[in-house]
Image 1: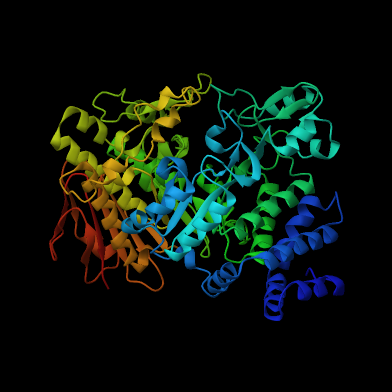
Image 2: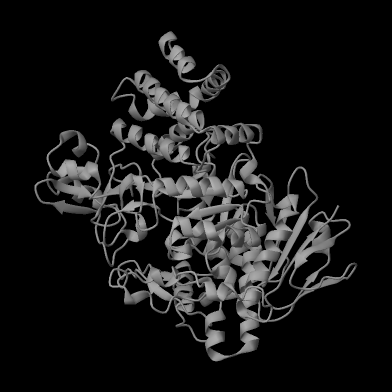
Length: 640
């Protein structure tokens, strides 16, 4: 048990009022093991970890003392209700501030729009000041203490956070943990010869160590940034996992950990509710491995979580870890015993399975892959999504493909060809991204509306195909909203916005086709959202309906369980959701161009004795011997 000495405890009581000091010390007693154990395992052979832990606790104390009164009140509410982010009313929206509204101030003018959609969780894409020029979409941060001046200031962020809280909306922003821009102050000082800053990064005098590491390192961007090291004249070979202007931090140096903790606490005190921790699998490097998902990366996250919870108990950590499901659930603390780590993690596998099923019209791969994974620990939640700012990587394992009667390589290639519009009969209008000729790996870019056939139908003036495309979009989002997790709507999907046709006109973006699915918000289109005959109105009404229905269904909150229920129909995905405090819930989704029949016994298997249609895009009559699902439709059933 980690305990403060008399002097440190006196500092707590001096910095905080009596009640706040008692609360802080109570949290410390609860969290002391989660602070001390990971720090000892990571840094025990390097420094005096008891002294280091005490210094970090005092850092947390200072942050707690500086925390604004309204945020302290929010902390108390969330300590009483630690499952606040698991509620079925949590519905997310993801956007770039500049592309959504021009600036943080402009965004405040559209909070009613978000409320109309049902949003209670807003994720603003990279906000911290990036390097000038190419910045990997904002993920090459030059200053953790400043907002990108093109969208505003830290003061603007604080005002926005307060207004969001007034609307009942939590704020999420990105924090890049693995690397900084080479223009960051630490990197500039390292280049100028500062030995302390040199130790903040992974720098080698020659190619000996880099060559040894690269023998087992995969390339992230083989087309545009091959290799994992960059030679910097006068400095050496710098580890650059992603791009030559993004320098990997050296977490074996405890100073790096302390600096990043300070950044987290500062952002929390600005009003940020959720920190999306970018690239967390890459935090620790070990020779002879792919340098991802190392045990130390998990230990670092455990310590970050405990120390931030000590100062700002209302803060939530979200892991950006696009890894296999067996490894992914560990970022939620699911090890041999539960070890609190991140509170949220992206459900990448569900996203991939949805697009795979859309292309193949066959649910068997999804049934197998989704039914065999470990559940998220009860205090945590998945974040479910259909599209995001990034490309789609086809995370389909060979073993899962084989279980569904498929060849893994062939199926992944089929998906890429289908969604790039190269497969005969494809309705998709995406594009291939980062094709690796050595491995055959290739990913796909594109907006959801373009990938599910809406863009091609509008271009052809084909109303029947447009209806099918809109139904595909709604049905896939219906799974996102009901599978178990916080659903995220990617900006523009609620209006069926297509790919940005002018994405390549900006020379800074022309080399990266992911910008095709990062369009600017079209507020003229948004103005048509109330017109039920328009594409925008039909899409908005569909997602708004999902949000309203979800908010009323306790079974859809996180912390429950999801069970796949095979129907024997290869085009129908069925699953059951159960929460200890709710009636059972059954979802049925038809991934087919034709109507499909499902035996009514599926209702009994789901545990529904008096079923009723809670929401859906197809009619389901009571007492029928079979349930008929229209093409690309879904039904949500519930009941005692």
